[in-house]
Structure formats: structure tokens, C-alpha cells
Amino acid sequence: MSLLKSVSLITQDSKMLDLIERINRIADSDISVLLIGETGVGKEVFTDYIHHLSQRGQYPLVKIGLATLPPDLLESELFGFEKGSFTNADHSKKGMFELADRGTLFLDDIDDSPLNVQSKLLRAIEAEEIRHIGGTRPIPIDVRLVCASKVELKDLVENKLFRQDLYYRINVVELRIPPLRERKNDIPLLVKHFVKRYKPKENLDVSDEVMELFMNYDWPGNVRELRNVVQRSALFAEKTISMKDLPDRFKDNDMIENIVKSCKVCFDSGNMSYKELLNCIETRLLADAINKSDGNQSSAAKNLGMKLSTFRDRIKKLDISTPSSGRNQ
Image (cartoon, rainbow, N blue to C red):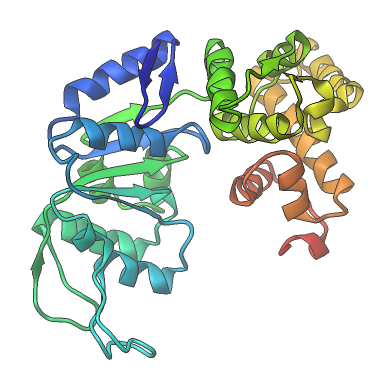
């Protein structure tokens, strides 16, 4: 088991241990790192690990989610701006590159960055300097760059949605973080860790039935979803986390079993691949959550223990139709 308390990096899985060993070898260098993994696998936690192991660990670690900001604000957040450079700019402001000086800059969801911002990112990385919006003075930057993507960037490059030159610039070392469903032997360790985090003063146990359910569940939201489920369940549990303490979606075992069985019929008949089987099950579960929430996506995501952004990413990727009334909720 590998455990770094400062960043809660917990695993006994061989693939994860190999990944950590690779990180240990490159952490103290200044090379750019690209983390690839589904939403919720822990890309931010791995960034913390890389930063704290590096020679830049005593300096700032600055994080920005490129999917969380509209394009017109993203540039000013990254590069800063001068007073009077646009409406309501009544003061100058440093950007993320400056705030991360001598430290590490984490660009999450870089796959969602607009092409015009990508070109400016490339220019800043290669020239090692930036300019404020509305400014003319070049500002030297000294940062170690860690980027994260939830999709294959090379596919975006092929579809001309991501700059090839920027892809090669940030992808000096590529690290792939496996989803939780591919390292289920970590689930008991993680459950124990989260129980202690959220109920530190109580010796809370987990029933065999609950643990078996956790081990058989595919965790589309990965470690983040597991953490949220354990946190919620621990709040309701007394001495042991049992089935009654879990979110409603885990209690409806018959519904889940029927979905799995119906999708598996097509799989067993040879009409779908294993990947299509998983997509079938996930599609049915997400669609059922939407129906039960009367089309309210915020409520459906909450009931599934998923971030709203993750939920919307999945229904878009799986092409799940939603009532128009629930799309913006």
C-alpha cells in the first residue's frame, strides 16, 4: 500500500503502484506532465503528489479548471489584465501564470480549452513569458506545467479541435490514471480511508452486504463518487454502514439487476461488445435517474452522487435525450 498523507494517495493496485513509481522518477524534474483519466479518478490528487515531491514544492501550486470558466474570462484568469483594459477592469490583476511563479500550474480539463486560448498558451509556454490583457510589457514566467484531460487529446488533434503543436508541448510525459472499475482491490482501502475522514471519532464499520455491492458496482464517477457515497452514508450510519444508509440508487437492487440482465442478453447473443455493454448499462441508469427527477439534471446528478458537470458530460457522450425543461437546471 502506498499512502502519502498530505495528498491522500492510497492504493495497493499494481497498475497504480507502477504509476506512482513513474511519478517518483520524474517528479523532481521540470518537464511538463499530461494526466489522462476519466472524471473523478484523482487527477488533481496526483498533481498534488507531483508538486509536493518536486523541488518546487515549497512554492505555490495554482489550479484552474478550464471547463469552469467562459472563454471571455478564461484568458484574463490565465494571463491577468491591466486596469482599464475592458469594461469593469477598475484595477490590474495578476493571472494564474504569475501566481504560480516558481511553483506548479495545473490546467485541468485542457481538452475543453478554446482554440484561441490554446494558441496563447503555446506562446506563453514556449516564450516563457506572458502579457496582461491590455498590457505591452512582457512578464517572465517560471512554472512547471501539469495538464489534465478526461479524453484522448490525440483524437481531438485529429479532429482539429486541439492544436497539435500544443499537444506535443504539454505531452512530454503522459501518465494514464486507471478508472476505479479497473482497480477494485483498492475499494476496501478507500472506503476505510473515507470513513475515518468523515467519522474520525467513531469506530464505524461497513457491512459485508454494502462492501459486496461496492465491489460489484462500476463507479462511473470513480473515486470522487465513492467518496461522496461514503461521506453521505457515514452521516446516517450509527455503528455500521448498512444498506439503509446508502443513497436510493443503491437500494433499488431489483431495478439495477434488471438493467444489467437486459443489457447482458444482447451481450451474450454476440450483438454488442463489452464496451457497448457497459455503455448500455450506464445509459439505462442515467436515463432512469433523469426520469425519476422529472428531467431535473441537478437532482438526477445529486441522486447518483455525481458532479453536475460529470453527469452532463456522460449524457452528452452517450447521447441520452433529456426533457428540454431539465437541461438548464
